[in-house]
Structures are given as structure tokens and as C-alpha cells.
Image (cartoon, rainbow, N blue to C red):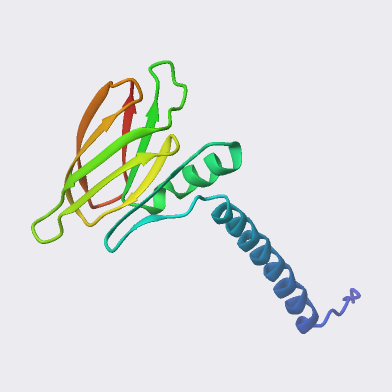
Length: 148
């Protein structure tokens, strides 16, 4: 008869639970670090925004958070270099949920929380170049990419 090594099921389960707990703690610490790299949110109520993306930690945190917000704005020159200090105006929304935001983007990535609806986004880059896009928010994250 083959010899069977006896391991207590409870000691294996305890080891597995401990390993899973360590992984969960590490994931939580990583998420907290990414959140800590985010600039503070601006605005109140159903319309708020955060802009950033300057520096690798902040850029990584902002890009990782894009899928968690209904609208993301990206600003860059035609050659792909990121831009900041872009003036942004967002108008529209569905009846009763109209959102109007006006702000200066302090970084090349802005995350915007607005109610579902159709919005017109007008932007003006330093130097006066302007762009406009219409987006419909709802049914998943949207990204509006502005190149100057």
C-alpha cells in the first residue's frame, strides 16, 4: 500500500487563505497608490472633473481610471506631444440633467463625470486654436481626443 503524506486540510486551507489575503492586500495597496497619484476632483453634484497626467505616476493613474468614468478628454499636439492649459467648455445633457462645465485643463488627460446625455465640448489651446466635438455619454466610457 502506498504511503500517503497526511496534511491537515485545515492547514492547507489556512495557507491558501493567507496567500489569497496577501494578494488582496497587495492589490489594494497598488490601487491606493494609483488613487493617491490622482489630482483632486473639481466641481460638485452630477458634474465634476479631474485633470492631470503630468509625470509618469499621475499619467498611469489617470489612464487606468479612464474606464471608470463616463467621459475622458485627451489633449495633444499634432506630433503627439501632450498639452496642458487647454480651456474646456462642456454644454448639453438631457432635459433636466443639463451639465455645463468650464475649466482650464491642468494636464493632458481629464476625467469627467456627467449624467448620460449628448454634450458639445469646445476647447481652446494656448495660442488660440480651437476644436469642438459632440459626444453622447451613456452605455460605456467615451473618449474625446483633441489634437492641435
